Image (tube, rainbow, N blue to C red; front, top):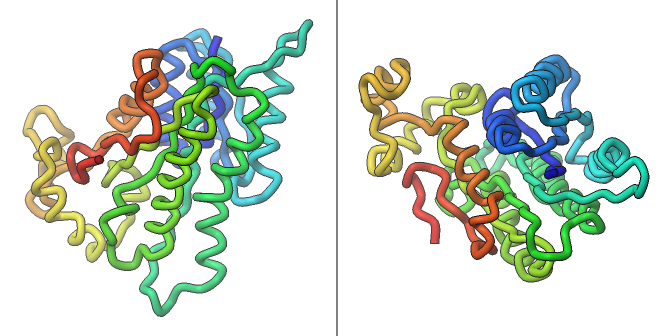
Length: 278
C-alpha cells in the first residue's frame, strides 16, 4: 500500500486533481491544507476519494510557511498510518505542491514579500522532505515530485521573488536526486498557465505576457468541440487555451509510477510545450 504525503495548495484544482489521479491507482493519501476556508472542500474531497476509490485518506491543517508545519504533516501521517502492531511506517510518494505568489515590480518588493514566498515555496518543501526522510524507502522505490513553474526560467515581469522561489525548488530537486539516490527519485514538473481560479484572477497585463508563449505552444491551440467553450471563445485574445488540472496531474502520476524509475533530477514539461524542458 502506498502512503503518499501531499502538500496541497490549490485544493479544488491541481492538488485535488493529483490526489484523484493517485487515489484511482490505489494510493492512500494525506492531504494538507492551510486556511480554515478550505476545511469544508477538503473534507468533501477526502470523503469522495475514500468512497470512489476504496482508499484511506485524511486531511491535515498546517502552514507550510512555518517551521513546525511540515513536521506536523508527517507526524500526523505516521500517527494515522503506522502498522497497529509493529509500528512500521513508510512514505512512498511525496508531492510538494504548496505555493504562494504575489507579483510585484522590483521597486515595490518588501522583505515581508520575500520572506513569505520563500518560506512557503522553498523552506517548506525542504522541511517536509527532511521530516519525511526517516520514512522513505531504502530501495530507490520512493517518489518525490516538486511542482515548479515555467516562471523559474522565463523571467516574467513582476516575478522577481516568485520566479526565484521556483528556480530554487528546481535546484533543490537536482541536489536531492543525488543525495537521496538510494531512497527515491526526485523530479520537478513545470506547469504554465492552468485553468484555475488563481490564473483566472491574474491581471490583463500578465496574461498579455503569456500570449506569445501560448500561441507557439504545440498543445495549447484551442479546439472547438474538444476544449471547453469558454477557452475556445477566449483563444483569440489569450493566444490559445490554458492547461487543465488533470493534465498536470497525469504528468505527476507518471513520475510516481514504477515505470519512471530511470528518471531523476529532471524538470519535466507539464505545460503543453509552453516551455520546453531540458
